[in-house]
Amino acid sequence: MQSLTTQHWWGLIHPVLMILFVYPVTGATIRLGILARERRLQINPIAPTVPVEHAQHGSWVTGGVLVAVLIALSHSLLGQATGSLLLAGTAVMIGYIALLRSKQVWKRLAWGGACWSWMLCLGLHPAVERLSDQPWTSLFWQSHFWMGMVLSGLLISSTALQPLIGRHTTIRRWHVGTNVIVALLLAMQAISGTRNLLLA
Image (cartoon, rainbow, N blue to C red; front, side):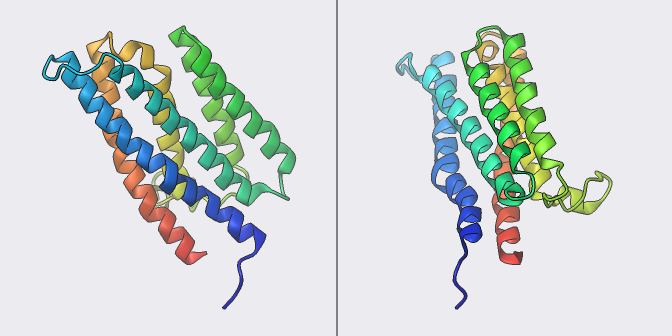
């Protein structure tokens, strides 16, 4: 049996992080979101801390996905674009921390956009496997990379808009709708990620 190299082990960190952290916390976030809705509609007299916990868990999911994406990109870029990886990876994490610390929504959106843009710049490096960059081809819609970028963007936007979700019905509906898409994307990522591991 062939032994795993250091690069193989590094490549496993991404799916392990998703399985052991992101997916369980996503489940908890969904459950807390349901409870927060029940509290808002006065269906269930639960603790007032539940909406706050829901938002916190959501930010953990987003942060976990960002770290997992950076780890996945580093698997392709280490040794080929190490400098760019370190620069952009640092910028992504600084941007996300700044987003979480910002109170004004426009600043949160700006930091979120910068964060996502840095990740996209990293992902567009030729060393990163994307299947296709052309949306009119079927391979594009099977791409683990592009689904991951959409997933990251939706999560970042939800985190950025978090202060408005409880106050505006339209934003709340948008939040629920986009996170249904997030749940579907997470399922699709599990499938396409497994496919990529089997074909590697």
